[in-house]
Image (cartoon, rainbow, N blue to C red):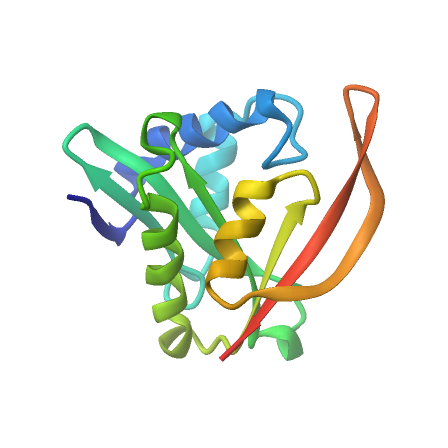
Length: 163
């Protein structure tokens, strides 16, 4: 059984570890180097968590996933649109934790003033594409060959959801 709750500063090391675990796989983030705890703390503290929450999923072993909304753009007129991120620890993959996290975040959209959600995924990240599509996200756009990781060009798919 998992509990999903608002993240606190005490969760930042686990959030950072889960994020950094994803970097070498080259499937979920375009970061190429591990993120420092100071960088993750700045990301956490420099946000309005009332409208751009960070959530964690906790099981018997501790934090096993996290998810967050971030601004699509920082200009005020874009406030109703947010980008979503969901990261699941390797040890919890395939257990429905990502789906539960996504559902918890989408349930928060009314209280956050969000009515459009963007999921920006690599085109080769089939698990994430399936997850978002299972919750009604549809393709809103693409950036062909948008980045280079280890000498390989990778395309990005923009999925969208509207309340």
